[in-house]
Image (cartoon, rainbow, N blue to C red; front, top):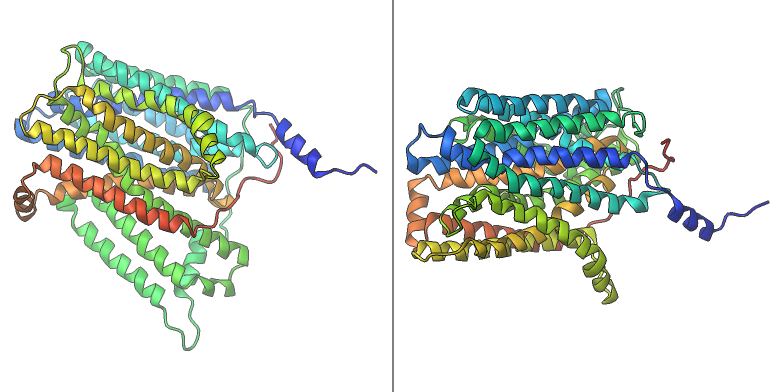
Amino acid sequence: MNTVTAADVTLDAHRARLPRQIPYIIANEGCERFSFYGMRNILTPFLVTTLLLYAPEAERAGIAKDVFHTFVLGVYFFPLLGGWLADRFFGKYSTILWLSLVYVAGHACLAAFEDNRTGFYTGLFLIALGSGGIKPLVSSFVGDQFDQSNKHRAKPVFDAFYWIINFGSFFASLLMPIFLREHGGAVAFGIPGLLMLIATVVFWSGRRKYVHVPPQRQADPDSFLRVVRTALLAQSPGESRPGLVVAGIGVALAVVALCAMGSLGIVASLCLALVLLLAFGGGGAWMQLERARRSHPAEAVEGVRAVLRVLIVFALVTPFWSLFDQKASTWILQADAMTKPEWFQSAQMQALNPLLVMILIPFNNLVLYPVLRRFGIEPTALRRMGFGIAFSGLAWIAAACIQLALDGGSAVSITWQVLPYALLTFGEVLVSATGLEFAYSQAPHAMKGVIMAFWSLSVTVGNLWVLLVNAGVRNEAVTAHIGATGLSETAFLMFFFAAFALVVALVFALYAKRYPMQDFYRTEPSLA
């Protein structure tokens, strides 16, 4: 009788091959990211110079920022819909394929309606729906291709996945501003649409090779929402329900947020209402979660507890996204005021971000992390994410110092923006590339698509903070307070967001010390 030793198991694990379907997903992601960043990174300058010419010149930059962040907010809001459709009805593959076609239609609208606001905004909506709907699914679809035998290969694949995102983003950021200047919006938005069509065809081509995890079509009596509802409503004689009171407060605040549509806009109000429901509802459920054990198995209750812990991590990451996404709005507008060669477009500075990502990912894996381990410092996922948030704050301090020089009348070269871009990109690699793997590994099996959607929702919340702050500074009292500081509004907001990130980085570090890591990779072997 042969005995299987631990060494044999370890050897088999190291021999486990890379799933052969991964190249199709990686190639699809590269083309899709070219299409997305190609249109996103020229959106603000296109709005200011073309679509918003009806508005007074002094107001165009502010309107463009609102449109841009509302669009990004929508992109990262629709993952909730995509994750729900995939988990309950169609599965990840079919949902990705059909929403990709919606995505292509959105690009077509941008190219066809470059001078028509209704048609153009319809295209932005379709892109937000398509891009957002597939966003949580592609990364979790990558995770589905692995099991316990080859999960050690998942981290380099997730890194490669993030590397190809930035490969596509680099060339899109470098080339699309030139096409916009030389050929106009129809061509500049049409090329990303063509790349998205290619991405869809590539993804479809690998259909016979993928591991397909079927959706959970039957209503699960122990689902996340059912366990939460039981926890909130359960009551025995002599028990009060403080958690239900907390959830009720969340409902009341959500109604108030919906009533603020006139000042915040429909999308921002809906997102704020959802955030309030999640925050107060989740907090209330946590307070009474043990009561759910009377009606649900321990595994289901602990699964909900794991999800709630993850949502706290996601909530603490939101300030990072509020800083990161403003590089395509606030930083482009800052670059417009800086000295640069005539041939160089401000939006082309966006190419520096993906270029640095492609350098930093292998540098971190091959140099930085091994060096840290030699000194006895393990760069865990949560440590990397916490430091990433802090570096984003440092980046915005650097950007604010540049703004102070501009406000003082100094001529500042655009090359100075390299410093904040470098700091922000280092933070991005630590947060975003790590977050994809962290979100998948911490998600219970029945919640893969939805929890990846919650990861994307953290980006929505980050852009929501930007919209709320921009709405706040329109208040005369707030404007007067900013004026009393002696800073311009732009410089004040830059320092404000930097402080926001640094404070949250400290809170994140304190929470990370007590977070219990989970391992929710599949245990059954792959079929492909």
